[in-house]
Length: 453
RNA sequence: GGCGACGUAGCCAAGUGGCAAGGCGGGGGUCUGCAAAACCCCUAUUCAGCGGUUCGAAUCCGCUCGUCGCCUCCA
Image (cartoon, rainbow, N blue to C red):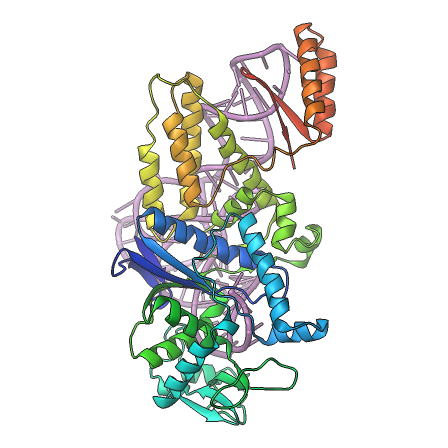
């Protein structure tokens, strides 16, 4: 298997030290509804995780909750509630959204505020080793103490300095130094420390949690491309300076960012930006296919037309699963499709080609089904491979439909009309139902109905 | 200003040196009482533009145009 490593800027063979894969993905800062950007990283790394498990690795997946941070504090103060309560509320909502998207729950979900002791330990260690210094109750990381600072984002200190917007803080020795510990300010939550009351900086949180739960060297660290600098760059600086071990992370993976597109489009879409809004209209499978239908490292622009297309595609996959051939007769062998799927996934998670393979398999299943051969195993393979991408291929909530008895009554009436060759009346029933969003299909096994979203 | 990504059919999107995956949409056909679903056929002589390297380029190099990201909080 090959994975594109942001650090080396090329695809590398994935060779973890053993069958264990230690994976850390930067989670959310919960101060509002989760949006499509969150869905993007969650779905991408969920697929990565599922595929690694499929390949036989034992994966430990850690995803943190940043529950102390400027935006949370600001928002909580505006609402007049404790920061912790705000964070908990939206963290819970986030995981509800994740469940709705069929994203597996992380093995470990550390909350930053519960990991302060580990952060203090790391900060202390960094001061002792000369990588950090105290100034007015705050602690800063001394960027110049790390010769290869900038290696992840592929920039040098000089080039960063020339980005004119960096203002030297009066406390800092050097403009690019970043805060490990921020001295307490009025109206902000704070914790005791050897340097006085304060709160942790954002970057030290992830470093501490990764070190605590996964160890000094981890296999995969993921996040959005917007986190490469400064967040992940700083994580490297902190971790490698603290442990003295390199690399902190063997494979850095970053997904492309979700774009909202131009004003015109988002307007015509009625402002679909939260996960909930999308799931009101489309199935989770469709949304996942929309996300995974483009490569994870490319940016993705929200397009209602594209999600619509994905929904029809998802429907096609579901349909193939529902179409049964005859058992016992000649069987369709799906191993070539399975191999193709593995081959494209092995190349830096080629989910677009993997989905294309699914469609190829679907065509073959349907084709063979028409001939009346046994597609049971092939359909099981389809379901299995789709599952690696987190697709359920289940009909979205068909069960609890209050209108079901009435629809079935109409169907049986229509059946009698058709038997009596009263086609005009029969068609009228079908047309009226279609107007209400209910489509009928006359199959050899009888009439089936579906409610379209 | 610095660093970087991208520009492939009506739409979405793979491919990154050897005759342009896949999905949606569209057209035609088979099946059907008619539909739907499904299947079959067709739908980019061409990959933003212009030069160059090469036996051969969407794929490599240069320039131009355009879109976007990061450099500050962000998945």
